Image (cartoon, rainbow, N blue to C red):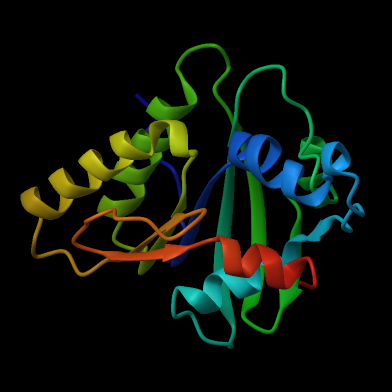
Length: 191
């Protein structure tokens, strides 16, 4: 289990790096199909589109971006900047507010899905978190759905807004907003 003393911002984005490397990078670089390579995603631009889709509006918001990754991974191929050590502890200013990046490794102690669910539960319970945006890897998305369903069932009085992002529209049934990440990614690529 993760240390219970994590300081969260009012808006928290949990993003799986494997989702970006394994699913988004092939969209950006379609070498196999002979298509043109797209530019790398600009963090501020893409995450602004994602946050707007979740209902966050421009202002002086603090958005905490937690990038979860497995030991041995050191970069995000589709984003600029892409090196995790360059992103960790950095921030960028957008019209939505300040986006603060923290890279969270599994450190061979747990799996990425376990880490994702643990952070989801901690952020959901944290009083300072107003809204939680989730971008899990589809390989364990069902586990996240189960954890969210249980959280909403066990703590129905909490007023946290949660948006679950899938790559494409799907039939996920949750007691929270379900949206697609594809449109924000396509827009950030200029498509």
